[in-house]
Image 1: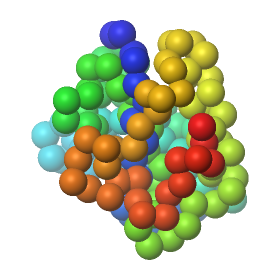
Image 2: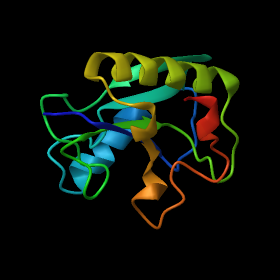
Image 3: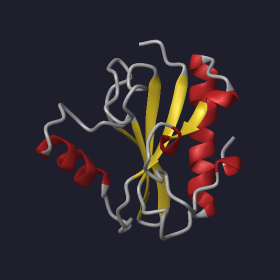
Length: 133
């Protein structure tokens, strides 16, 4: 894959401080995907934000129509149309984005919100892209 973009999403589900990432994977599998559609997830587990692996970077994503072959999908567990992103989640996401940008030489202007390619509000009305780029 030639990764040129990073696309940020939210799960639109409550983060329960447990491993909700498995539920996202199960939902994708139950609805016909070969695996979870995102390459990475960020979730609060026992009070700490963790980066979780999803679909292999050797495979195109299944997270953003028109961008799956060149956009790395990152999903924050939470519904940021209702809730606000925790400062620690922003920090973890910013670190992941920085690492991926360095590895794949992705320019800052290619870090995008799912809503830039869709009519959805994803990653939520309360998500502030300026906090991670």
